[in-house]
Amino acid sequence: MNRKLISFLILIIVLMKMSQVTFNVQKVKASGSIEIRADGLVDPPGTPILNVSNVTYTFASDISGSIVVRRSNIVIDGNGHALEGLGYDKGFYLNGTRNVTIKNTKIQDFKDNGINFYRTSNNTICRNTITTNGDGICLDYSLNTTIVGNVITANKYNGINLRWSPDNTISGNNITSNYYGLRFDEAHRNMIIGNVVTKNKMYGIHLYMSYDNTIAENLIETSTDHGIYLLRSLGNTLAENIIIKNKDDGIHLHMSFNNTIIRNNIDTNGDGISLSASSNNTISGNTLFLNNYDGLYLYDSFSNSIHHNNFIDNSHQWRSIVSANVWDNGFEGNYWSNYAGIDLNQDGIGDTPYIMDENNADHYPLIGRFHSFNTSLGYYVNVISNSTIEDFQYFKSNSTIRMHVSNITAAQTFGFCKVCIPKGLMPPPYVVIIDEGLTEVLHLNETIYDNGTHIWIYFAYEHSTHKVAIIHEHTQYDNYYLLFMTTTFSIIATLLAVIFYRRKLAKAKQQVLK
Image 1 (tube, one colour):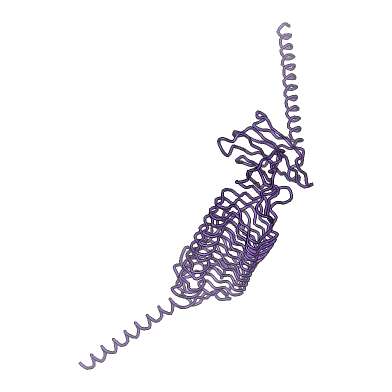
Image 2 (cartoon, rainbow, N blue to C red; image 1 turned 135 degrees about the horizontal axis):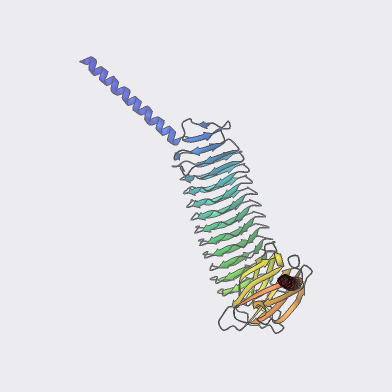
């Protein structure tokens, strides 16, 4: 009896030990770091990552823990599965590696960074969902990274954070509901193109001491603070972005110089564009519409070049405090929806200046809104018009510009276009045709201005909806010549056919008579 009892107690102890060992192994697997080693092996063994030829690594299931990547020239495919932090610091961590692709992974719940690259180059991060981390993606001293097609949302600090990292491309990402959308610290020559940056709690895009970056064709909206904020940053280009409904400024520059802000649509923000202690910037071709405070606010800012912008129905079109700037390029200024001047000499420019204060005046205010159209050859055609312009097209095959114009208001009876054409795109002289010649062209001036590389023309019309064609004059003559030659050949061919038919008919009659 005692022996049985002793054996039973020994069995219980053994089972308890086995249970404890099993529990500890499971705990180590959940919390341990996974490593893709430099020799290509995955450590620890048994990790649910399929390794094909030490080149492609594919998740077979969700994984908890961090992955340290020490091998270059590989592809890591999450295959739709998750990499979960559960309180750990980093999701994917790369140090010194290159040419690594991370794709198709749900990366979530890491305290520090969902993805962290340190001193890496030529890597790709694509089609991942990166959420509820510290930073979604963080690049430190890393270059030539492509970040494309990711959903980066609800991260505690930054959606994307670049620190001392140059020459990277960030495009086609959805960056939503982070604290900062994108934040750059001393990051230079990066391309931020075609992203959706919305509902971020601080700034949409923030640049600090960052030079020569391009921010283009992004949608930046509903940030709690500024849409784009440049601090102590030089030589950056902000082009063709849609910047709307940001609570503070659409674009704010502080102590920033020699930046270019061009062809952006900026509406329904606090201020449209705000400059403080910032000089020698270029602000051109932007539309500032219905902003709640100022279209353009300048404080302690000098020698900025401001022209070809449309200031439309902002609460205040401008505000200038201790600032003196240049509001035209020497022959064309800006469009102001509250400008009351007239244009008696019909050149698209108001006859009286738009005066702001003793230090600021637009000497050549535009009578119509400014438009800039990119052609297939990369040349821009600029149009100043009091009409709505739609369907602008350039046809290289026959050197023709075509567009539709219509009246902006029902009461509008007179319309005009002042068109700036690059000679490299379409050499003069030009012919203007409205509605295939059925509508009269009024006040045509074919050489209103010529600076050697571009030529400006002016024409007007009685208003309704019209089709306008601007044709290289020799093209028109060539078309007439082609039409003439085609018609002539057609007539000659018809006459020859008639002669041949008559001869054939006469010959047939002679054979019958015989």
